[in-house]
Length: 274
Image 1: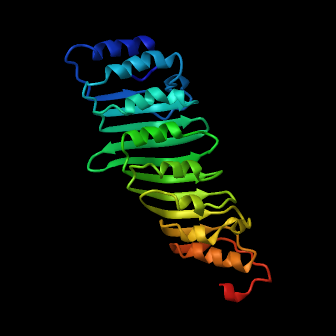
Image 2 (image 1 turned 90 degrees about the horizontal axis):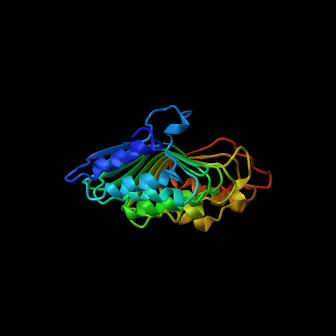
Image 3 (image 1 turned 180 degrees about the horizontal axis):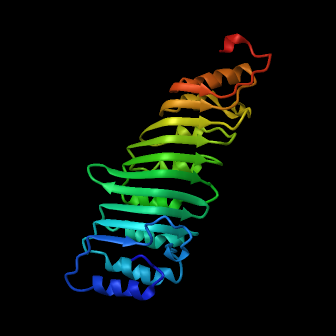
């Protein structure tokens, strides 16, 4: 179904599925290509889309559906995601892919779910996080289908870690990994990182912006509480007091390697802190 706004085509597909003994193994909805200008190929789960698409989803129950591929999905409200949730949560579904998911201002590309020995979610492209958007619908969906393992290629947190940590705190989660995580804001990130569920690892973690003095917002006890495996820690900025130096060194001890792009130290800091 390349054009979900084609009501007649969707209704015809629904009637076909409802035929006696009809079995549906795989379904592809929306454009899977790369032309973002083709607005008509976006999936907009809102009125009038929701009416005929909800009927389609309902008809797929007990039809043996195993695989789902969705193109570009644009959800501006929580209710917009309800139909998508119903589709992805069908009990027979073993795998699904969303090419491009837009939740308000948050964009997640190449999201894939696979049930095998471990229920695994993979995000192959960059995830740009804006915490002003509530991502609770997708988190509820992932909790419902029992995600146990999450792999993310790249995350760019422009404001804070709240949304990311909500994803990594799903009750069923056993392990997770992030290839590249960038936290470009002055708040304390370690308090959130300590709350992540399961066994987590970050290949490359970048903290700070330019030469900002962000270490003053860190708490050493919260840094010590982090149990995540970090391979490379990259820092931009530096401490202003001896106590901040000790907190910074505590953070450096979390990783196998570390790199500081720019370090500004006042003359009052003594060498003993290092």
